[in-house]
Length: 430
Image 1 (tube, helix red, strand yellow):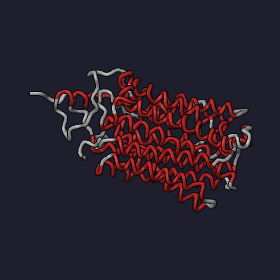
Image 2: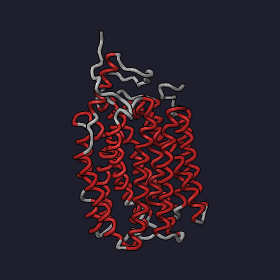
Image 3: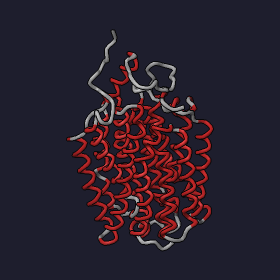
Image 4: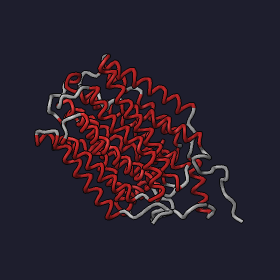
């Protein structure tokens, strides 16, 4: 009679509530680390760091450096975490973030901010990736949407809150000093939490894989993607997620394109709003509405995908988000911008946790960390690709609005690809 090889590693949110809460706290801090740059740095790039007005490509270089580094680190961290553990990689991520507040404080020009965002990419690629992977380790298949929804709610809630708070702080105090104190406090608290209060979850993934191989796993039959070998290496997994499997490929391209939106909101939207006469506090509220709606809505969009499946929430999310982006430059009032930002946030909430959950659905536990890393490589490479294209289009056209047209159109086209190519991945649906 075959026995469960690791009966103590039970899956489920309730069964693993303590590590689940630890992960939520960590991703909240990760979100705040990126959010401290969302309002003040782009809006004051000219005044504080000498970026010429209208130089959209130069302005967006700090997002380009972040995106390319974070994308690469997502892949690296996913693979490494299957050898050294999730907690170790998380700690490395926070160590990488320690110099960032000091660089912002002392930066003599925009090149230093670009360099700081290389470290931010390391931080995000290691730390945020581990919060996602750790949740996939400890939850059941029918809870992946809920788990990723909570994870991204906490993360992007942190992004929005930090963007709003730093907008207020920079309006009443010295901008650089405010970002320095805020960023250093967040980084030190997060590092302490990672070292002292974060549960290693790699044994859960290994136990789940052992149960699958032994035929003792319970629940609906998973729809794992087939691999040529039983123990695929890095190259094989990269090829599988990038082009060999149609579902992985559709999910990866959608992940890459949707980051065009976040690059736009991060770097170009604050500049556009400032050109329209908005104050730092007003810019903080508009970008905050996008982040709060995105973050808060994932509390219902994640569970929605557990009930109705992954495909159509993701597809409609791409289209709704694209429509919101296209609407943003059509308005000239805070109310209009706020409504368009909210629509964009709802679209992001529908697609964001759903794409991650879909990757988790079809990834075997033995290489799930690696496949999530490859997906997140392509997804966050979208920051760099999107920022570069948005900057070039805006510079060539001489207008910031062109960046919105490019991003919105790309989202609509990517959603169509997803609708035509993706098969349902949820084990209970379809």
